[in-house]
Every structure is written in C-alpha cells, then in structure tokens.
Image (tube, rainbow, N blue to C red):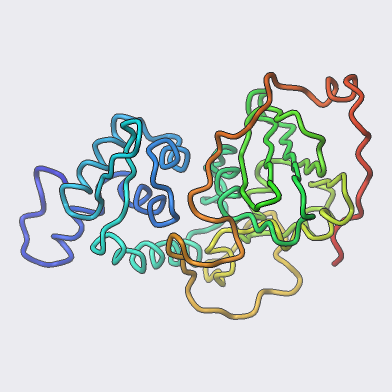
Length: 296
C-alpha cells in the first residue's frame, strides 16, 4: 500500500490503495493463475524488478491478501487468502474490459517472447497430444539469437516445461513465424488457420500434432471475448467467430480444467548445451516431416 493514500472513506478509494499500485494487479493475476513460487511469479512479470516484486508481495501479505508459507529449504510459497481469492472476479473483469475495448494495435505493441511462452506453457492442453513426451519448438526468426527459439516439453503425465535452450529431445513440431503473429493468435486477434493461410506462420513435423494445434494450443482466457473497439489490426479475424460466451474466468488453483495444471515448473529442461537447428541436423536428428496446415 502507498503511504500517501487518497484520504477518502469510499470503499473504492480504500480498495484502490491496495490493489491499484503499479504492478500489483499483474502480481495478483499470476497468483490467481496458480503461481506460488517467487521465480514462477516473476516469470509472469519479467519486466518487474525482483526488489519491487518482493515489496509488492510483502504489501499484499500485510493487507491480508497473501500468506507466505515456508517450504523445506527456506523458500517461500505465496498463497492467496480468502480475501485475495475474492479479487478473482475483479481481475477477470479488468481483463475482459481490456480485451473488449483496447485497440489491438495498442495491445500488440508490447511484445515479449518470454511472457508469451510462459502463458502458452500455463494454458497448453496436453490431452490431444500423443501419450508420450512431446517437444514443440517455437521459432521467431526476426528476434535475436538469445530470444529466437523456445521449446515446450510436454511429458506423458501432462506436465509442461518451458525451455529457453534446446532440451536435447527430438523435435516433434516446429512452429515458425513472427512474434507478432503468434501473439495475435494467443490473444484471439487472429487464428492459426489465418496465419498459416497468409504464410506468415509455418508448421512442420508430426501431422497429427499439427492438425490438433487449435486444440492443444490453449489461448488467453480473454481470447473469446467479443471485441467492441474498432479493430485496425493487419491480422484477419477468424472466418467463423466463436460462439457468444460469458465473461472469461480464471480457474481456481487445483480446479479441474483441460489446460495446463497449476503449479507447473519450468526448470526441468535437461539439455547440457543449446543446439541450433543446423547443429541438430549435423548431429543426425531425424528430419522433420512437413505437416499440412490446419484445416479451414
């Protein structure tokens, strides 16, 4: 909470003093999505300094919204109290409003591959994938070498790891395209079908995994919101708009849902060193089979 509040007895004022400080709403978003460990929360707010994150978590704890529980080894778990859980509809309503009314060019201005991939990991639906380990690589050719390649490793049990370096497994599917295009798909501004048809995105690898990408690639919880702002995006909206639905909701941690289970960690990448695609070819990895674009 800020030391210099609004000085009003209005409940809106008093609530705003707690939840409207810079970054606080995004920290609450991460907690509501099931992140409990400091490093996992930080992955969802990569541009927030660790010092400020620590302060915001402490402020939320002081306000009674978060409780810190020590784990074995001294690390802390940050869990929402009943008071904090009660903020779920507020944060979701804020996101629903942003999806409906914020013009897509503004929302696509702040592109961040690490945040996008972290969200993909969190909402990926493993059910349509083969009952074995699947490694899916996303490649953004226009980015620097350090940010160009990302891997999602889906284990047979359904756990999903996000790797910023080659995990050393055979690649089942390679998705290549501009970060802007993949972000537009994630946000519901465009679709995989539209992006592949326009040849902005290519998909190579296992045909079965490729054909099911619309199912396993979980989108933003707000993607199905009907936009009400005039859209001047260069991206094509899906030919068949989604069926009308109510406001998006974030599942409570531990609740059943087909997307990624809460609490997944991204530290399980076993590779000893990174490999470029060229190095992988020289190492004798099997050639990827071209997959047809998802059906229209």
